[in-house]
Each structure stands twice: as structure tokens, then as C-alpha cells.
Length: 282
Ligand code: C2E
Ligand code: CA
Ligand code: CA
Ligand code: CA
Image (tube, rainbow, N blue to C red; front, side):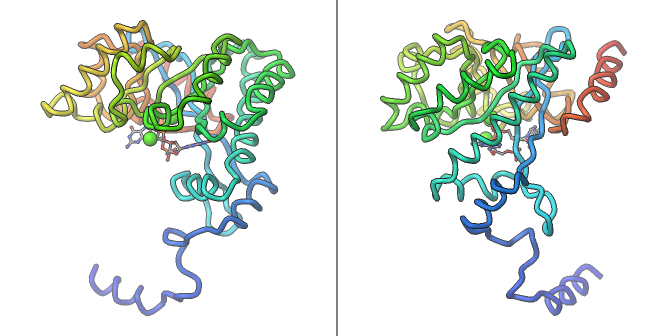
């Protein structure tokens, strides 16, 4: 029956209008999505491994496409980057996130809100002014905003100028996080030069690290390196109780992943927090 379904599907596919799962979007599509504010921030909780406290959320953008439904970021971020649209995209995501963080803050939820930025974003002249203005306008302490940059981007060949910008952001009290750690081969010496507050172990070295010696070796080394430099360690991609147990046994500070929660719409966060409190107490 599966085979038949496949054949039938083959007959009905119109090549000029591929199904949304395979459609490749153009720069104009993305430009229009930004202009029409079709990009929606989701927020994935990040919790303390020790006591379950909700420390913060990571902003993860999705495109609510009027026809194709919810489009994941790996299908449009790189197009934005390649077509000079990433500054506009980041500006929109950052504005939405900081306004939301300000609302949470006012309602007594003092969450840290993490935002993914690219090196191109940091190199563009007004990034720092933009983020400083946004926190001021929303009465938010800058240390509640965490700027995530991937390890491979920070250690790349053109890293020099943006590193100065990172240092200046630290001086303004923003938090800095090195993302996807373990995929970029940085050394202790390189890491020491950059004032990161947080290290996120890439999900590829977290899920099932308890059962795979190679993953476990990279997980352990990343944890040790980050601890030695005084950083908070976040494990990403925590998918089940076994993963969570490894974090507990090894003294990882924070956990993020579907075992705790999938990325949520802002409105769904309070209800999730109630449920999570019950899970932690149980
Ligand atoms: P990332 O920064 O490494 O974000 C973590 C990704 O892992 C997210 O995918 C998240 O939904 C997913 N994830 C979370 N928990 C689990 C889990 O337990 N298991 C598995 N398998 N995956 C999990 P998402 O939302 O599809 O985002 C993919 C990437 O797109 C992000 O990777 C980030 O690099 C980029 N991205 C997302 N939003 C933005 C943005 O606003 N700006 C920029 N520049 N990049 C973004
Ligand atoms: Ca990230
Ligand atoms: Ca990551
Ligand atoms: Ca990633």
C-alpha cells in the first residue's frame, strides 16, 4: 500500500508548483516575509540541571508562510545570509525578542533571552547601537540578553573585527554564548581571548553521549574546557531521560532540548512553566 501511495503521489505532483517541503524560496520571498512580519519567534526553554529552574529561553525563528505553513529556519536563514537580508531579518527577530523579554520582565518573569546572530550581523556598523537602544526602550537589563554566535563563525578567518565588537558588547554587560560547540575545533588558548559567559555543547555530542564513547569524549572535553574558563555550560539536544541523567552525573549547568520542551510560542510559555514545575516536583 505504501508503494501504491507513492506512485499515486508521483502522478499528482505538479512540477511547476512543488510541495512546500521541497520548494526553494527566493531572496524576494524572504524580503517580503520580513516586510510583512511573517517571521514569528518561538522560544525554547533552558533549565538548571540541578534544580529545574527555568533560566531562560532561546529565540528560534519560524516563517509562518501564508500558503505553505510553518517553514523552519534551515530553509531560509542561509538564503537571507547570501542575499544581504540577514541584517533585516536579525533586526526583526531581535526587536520582537527584546519587546517580549521586556513584557516577561514586567510581569515578574526574569528570563534570559538568547538570540542567534551571525558574524555579518556583528560586523555591520550599527549592531551595538541597535541592541543598546532596544534594551533601553524596553527597560531591560542588558545581562538578560544573551547573544549566541556559533563556534565556527567566531574561530573563522575573518573573526578579527567582530571580536572587538564582542568585547564591547561584554563591556555593555550583554551576555555572550558560543553556540554549536564541538563543531569548530577551537583551542583553550583561542577561547580565553574571547569573553564568553556561556558555552553550548552541540546537540550532536549530547544526545546518546551516554552510550557512545566518541560522543562522550567530545562532550567531556567541551564541558571541562568551558568549566576551566568559568563559563556556564548548556547541553543542547537533550531528548530523553538518559541524556538528562548524563548531565546530572557530569555536573552540566543547564539543559535545553525536546525532553524539557520544544520551542514554544510566547503565549504558550506560562502554561508550560506550570507543567514543568509539576514535573520537577514529581
Ligand atoms: P541552533 O541555534 O543550534 O538551535 C537549536 C536547534 O535545535 C533548533 O532548531 C531547535 O529547534 C533544535 N532542537 C532543540 N531541541 C532539540 C532536540 O532535543 N533534538 C533535536 N534533534 N533538535 C532540537 P531550529 O529551530 O530548526 O533552528 C535551526 C538553526 O537555525 C539554529 O540552530 C540556528 O543556527 C538557526 N536559527 C534559528 N533561528 C535563528 C535566527 O533568528 N537567526 C539566525 N541567524 N539563525 C537562526
Ligand atoms: Ca543557537
Ligand atoms: Ca546550537
Ligand atoms: Ca545548530
